[in-house]
Every structure is written in structure tokens, then in C-alpha cells.
Amino acid sequence: MQTRVTLHRDFVTSTIDGRLYSAFLEHMGRAIYGGIYEPGHPQADANGFRQDVLSLVRELAPPLVRYPGGNFVSAYNWEDGIGPREERPVRLDLAWHSRESNQVGIHEFADWCEQAGIEMMLAVNLGSRGIDEARNFLEYVNHPGGSAWSDERIKNGRKDPWNVRLWCLGNEMDGPWQIGHKSAAEYGHLANETGKALKAYDRSLELVACGSSNPKMASYPEWEATVLDHCYETVDHISLHMYFTNHEDQLGDYLALAEQLDRYIMSIAGVIDYIQAKKRTRHQVHICFDEWNVWYHSVQQDRRVLEGSDWPFAPPILEDVYNVEDALLIGCVINTFIRRSDRVRIACIAQLVNVIAPIMTDTGGDVWRQTIFYPLMFASRYGRGKALQLAVDGPTYQTRELEDVPCLDVSAVHDDEGGFVTLFAVNRHQKEALDLNVALHGFENARLVEHQCINHPQMKVVNTASQPDQVRPVAGEGVGVEDGALKGSLPPLSYHVIRLSVGAA
Image (cartoon, rainbow, N blue to C red; front, side, top):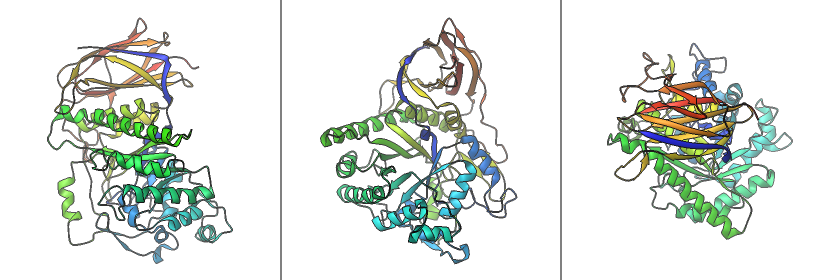
């Protein structure tokens, strides 16, 4: 099956914001307790942080981590997580039906981020609280000293402010499940007033307003139009969330979900453009896709906890175990973000450890990479630079909801400083190899320097603590540069990273 791709050095979609490869950690399940933080573990440091987990986080190198929620933040009192640990209250977390010990708060999480080389993206509670909580939290986190909350931070052991630049104005406020759920007009007004208060302190802060929890919400896309009508000039991003499922075990439909993601992004991009035109402003709002991942494997087993009568501490919920199919879809999702990086500036995989995550741990035991770890790692490592526009001519297939789904899903990034072009490619065809021919205009001296592939005969195979490397990248075969073009064959249902040396600018 012949597939032709054309790229040109000068045809650029955008310069990719490195925050496209960010992550998310929420106080839920074993993401924090038993994930990044486990005092007494053989690999834990003096502060209780697992160094084996940190090592894999550094491999992924997310530039930014969103914290502390998620649904959790909509009934969270950030003040519960400061001061002496022995004096911190235990609270009932209404979002995930569990107990919160508050042993990890802003100080501990900031220390972990510093170890990992990650910036914080903090969320404020606009569900059960509001403007006052947000401005106090900002003062505690960012002010040097000489005020009530900054002096409280200094008393609690942190002299220098953390200077957090990116703040989320609540979480999924369109959702009826959310503590403090609001109408679009109510939330838009509150987001605007909260944003005004935060920017009265520092105009350079970046603020994220809540968009739709998913594109199937009854309020979508009117929610975005109404919210932005209230707060367009105050915020810098609007968030979108989307989780991907394969309950019916239809692989072709599943791998095509990235096409629906693309429509979601472009629909909201159109709403942004409409409000910008309506406001007659030069201010540009971008999309922050701050929750996304595959989430369906664990739904049935989670009901025992979420609908139970007790309130467990750090229960094992949302612990999806990912297979090869999921890795292929994650590759397609990341490709979509790269191709739409002119509109999507930030994206956070949800979540980072244990809870629908690329990294899994056993309490007291091992840590390992899930199948979805690798596409994210490669994108974070090689997806920095300029997103190139691609023209793709090849076979397509049809699903129950979509027509003309390309069998080849591909993106390309030009690192002009390092002198590389990297292609991320997924062959979605279930039976046929794709004979690839990529015209490399402007890169006539290109040579192949690396080809990594994920291709396994069993689509349902997973990585586990006892078998952590059943699915992992291997050296690819049969691809090379010939007569100014990249040529080769991509096996069915396979993921590829193809790196070309093209010379530095």
C-alpha cells in the first residue's frame, strides 16, 4: 500500500511550545501516596520521595506538572497542606471517596518538582471556594515576604517564593459531578473576577479557564463561547479534556479517535476566533489540553471503591494497565497535538504515576514503564522545534462514525538548532504494511540516524512488574534515505520514530 508524504523546510505550522509534553498529578488513588511519595520504601529519600520513580519521570522529562487536581481541587483547602505535618488535618475527599492525610502539600510537592526539574502548574479551588482563596494561595506561593501569607510560607521553612507562572482557574466546572458546578455564565464571571485579582498582583501570570470536560457534554461548545465572552481578555488559555475508550473492542474505531480529537481542537479554535473577533482584540487565547489519556480498563473495578461505604486512604483506583493498542493510540494523539501546536500550546497527560499513568509502581516494590510510556518519552525527547506541515496521500479506512481515516498517522518536527528532522508515524492498518515515500524538500543532505519501532504480534500484551519489557521500542528495519526521499515499509499496527540528520541552521 503506497503512501506518499511531502514536507518542506519552509512550510511550518508553529514553533512547538515544550509544555506540550507536560503531565498531571492529582491527590487521588496512588498517584501521590504510594506513587511519587512512599516513606519507608527502599528507594525513598529522607523526604519520602521514591527515587526509582523520579528516575523514570526524568526520562519522560515533562516540563510542567498540573497539581493538585482535577476533581480533587474543587473541595480542597490548600492551607491543610502547610505547617507541621503532625498538625495537618485528615479530610474526606468528596471527589474520589477517600481520606486525604495532607502529608503532601505545596511545600512537599514543590520540593519534588525541584528534584525532578519540573515547573508547577497550580490549580485553585473555584468550586467550594473562590477569589479570596485564590489570591491568598498566590501570595503564599509567589510573594517574597513582608505580607501575612508570604511570611507564613517563610515561617514554614521556605524563604524564597516558588514564582509559579501558570494557574488553572478551577477544574471541569461544566460537569454536574463537580463540587461547586456552575453554569457557563456563573463560571465565566467568577473566572474573570478571579483572574483580575491574580493579575492585579502580577500581569505576567498565565491563566487557564475551564473549557469542556469532553466534546459530548450537552453544553459543548456553547460553554466555551459563554465563558470566553466573560473572561477572554483576562485569561491566556482555555482548557480541554478528553479520555479515550475502547469498550467495544473495535480497534479500527479506537485508533481513529485521534481524528475526533482533531475536530474537537479545531471546533474550539473556531470558538476562540469568534470571540476574539467579537471583542475586536489582538489578545490571543490558546488551548491548554490539560487532561488527556486512555481511560477505560479500570472502570468496573473502581466502582467498588467509589460507590463503597468506607473512606479508604490512597485506594488503588484508575489503575489502567495499558496494551499495545493503547500505545498506538497515544502516538496518534501526540501527533495530533504536534500538528495542531499552533492552537494547543500546553498538554498534560493524566496522570503521571499509577493513576491512568505511563509509570506504575508496586507499594513497597518495583516501578516499571507502561506501554504508553514510550510514545510520550520520544515526543518529549525529540518533539521540540518547528512542527512541519505535511501533505499525505495514501490509503484510508472507514469507521462507524468517520470516513476517510488515514492509515498513516504522522507528524514531523524540525530541530533546526540541533540539525534534525524527526517523524513520528503510526500505521493504523490492521493487516497491510505501508510503503512509505517521504519527499524531503529543503533537506537534500538528510541521512538516517535513528529508527525506533513498537510492533508486537499480540495487541493485548502489557508490561507488568514481573515482565516489564514485554512491550518496548526496538531498532526499526527497512527504512532509509534514497534520492532525497525517505523510503521504507512500515508494518501493520506499528509505531515509529524516524530521526534524520539534516544539518544545523
